[in-house]
Image (tube, rainbow, N blue to C red; front, side, top):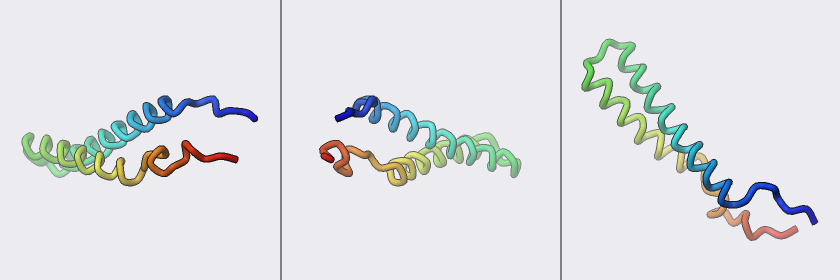
Length: 76
């Protein structure tokens, strides 16, 4: 039987990088929206930080860990 070419450690590493990138994407978009409405610099920074935190929460919720779902021990 053919084994998967991607290890579990590679999957975890990619998922972590993807979640961090997703959180930064959401945070930057929030900062750009605040910049677009001519907010002050502290408000833009706060929006960026709040957006990054919200993006991190969304990233961990929307993209669950496949190991937690039990796909590792699956047999065919």
